Image (cartoon, rainbow, N blue to C red; front, side, top):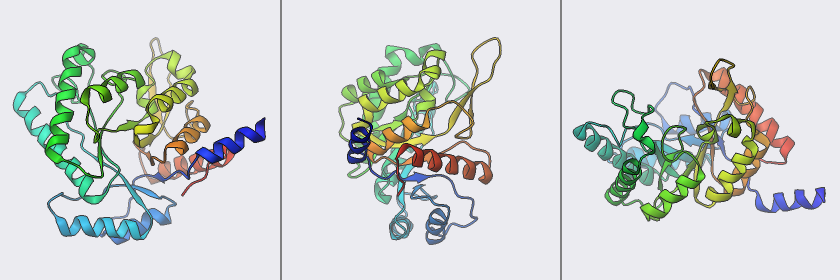
Length: 292
């Protein structure tokens, strides 16, 4: 049975494209692409560019393709639900520009969060972040962004958040159905969805549920880890992959089924990224996962 299970996994799996930031001080796309390969990465965050700068966009796409490094995502990181209507309008326009860049450079996706009604912190908690108003506004915003950018090869995605929709696979599925746009895809960050002791302790099951329900739409994934800091209330903190409790064997096996890149994020320096990368590759080898 074990051999049969391993064979089934191998038949489904594809080499994982792992990526992360690089710390080379240059804007030259060829040098950046080569640095990714030197570090053992086959996926990248998009270098700085504007969709309208056609020559630079083409140079980036060509340079990274030459090194067989996929551009996984273009980050938007603006609050599309800002309580200030004018700020909200500008933020939505900016996200549409970022999606246009993702499409122009051939990135797998543009990624943001849905936003927040918090008046001061753009990603902060707010009681209305789980409301019908929030859901409907997110549907409208995603349609606006997609219809304005009209991407042909990239997808618009939003991350799960522990205190805002989508907070798990079921609410993400509801958004996919309501938005009703082929250019809306899925970004999977399992740490963002682990928002309770139950999900923390049973994170392998939660990971499996996320990919079972959302995997066919997955465009890109994020890699980090979670540690529980013991206090008088629940306090999870992001840590280097391998220092926390996320079941990376399960995570990597699920990512491998989708073909989505896996991007390390939120670490403090090059040394931590190297530590996280080495842990992920070592754990992948133990789980029968290969890397591109």
